[in-house]
View 1 (cartoon, helix red, strand yellow):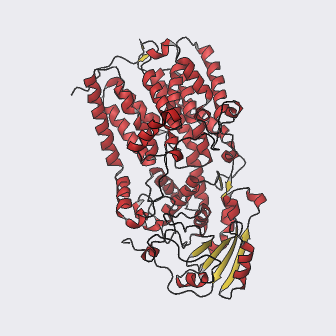
View 2 (cartoon, one colour):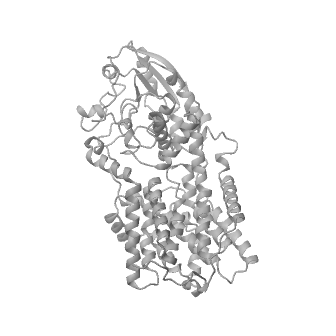
Length: 593
């Protein structure tokens, strides 16, 4: 099989050959500094006038879950083995925020840095903050390299980088979802993939497949969604069909091989989930199609500028893409010159496919159902809107690379467009700038952290009592980072011996038998969340009067200080000690269970 170059030289515009040249080091440095400065300006609320080792973004499932999961890796010493902490995802740490141990190489690296830094909660918050912020300049820089490779022009490359790395969806992720916003390898995957298409050289496809496998280690969703469009682009190349099929076969075989070799631990996790009946019973019920795509009327986060458009819906793909992007791409389609560009057709088809897959278009809903039929595992398809931004950015780079635009005209137009774009897509929700002060969390759980007699903590309201799966509240996860004590309830594997559905059997706090039940199970601390538990005042009065209990302390942060959030409501607790418990304390769970 001949893998030598069979293609014509790379062409730009109407097909004029362009010599292969390199980006000067000044452009590399300048681009990195520019994207870093833009990130610092857009996210000034995340580092300016706040302590980045204490304050992070809004309380969020992925944000708080990431903090807890990294802490668990550091605390147990299983930094590079998610399977190694499988037993710790239940008792003594109480629960897991995902249904099985999730392998994320970024979490591993963040945990390693936290461990090197000392392992305190301040180290944890600072590392996760920095990890979240550097994703933006890294994504912009890698996209700049890709766009420059396609256009051989710096201004179009900068425009494409801004549209991708500062998209509405990506900016929305700044409010949380720290484990989800590292997809800066995606443009590099395409950079070497396109070089393979242009040259046929095997080394380029090897690098592309390697990077995609690494992206899968970071986040399987982004790796799969990014890979999904590459066979389509390859098939649409202007080659003989035999050559297309040869290269497609090589590409798919190498992609699968690298995915397998670099993600064996992911395969082990799936096997663990399927073969462990206890964990299988705890899998979160899968959501339907309607829960995965953008729905009109759901109050997510449209951009600031998009709210001014009369046709903007509360959740509109256009609000995340930027209507200026959509209009400019649509207008460019009427110019015959763009259709002569090598990648315009595959990019525009991929752009439209990404929009359809992530959206609810009733006339095209069969396409969504077809996707779910074949790729049900990767069901979070609303995320594909970021792929729409990716292909939209590439299309805009091609538009701005037109030879008709002289540099002195191109620069102000590009500047005005980028300013309009950022104004449109920067999320208008107050949750984007909402802050969580972890020092307040630490202050609340300070007493429990210093309490050396704790065997396990039962918290009320105990909300893990649903019959299929159970995740403890996020505020309990954050509290455990501070006090580092076992939490009773949640996914306590020992309870499956008596209750196969895993329901906590300790009892509700207002049940007269609950205290004795807790004591029999070796639990000697009760935490009452006074702003969350119904009739907390009456419950506290009964507990104070109970001779079996002793009120150890009450701690609270006023709502004026901590703001309006579920986490803030949790920062008012009363801690009780059970005077006599059944020895010995709760045992650690055997790995064989």
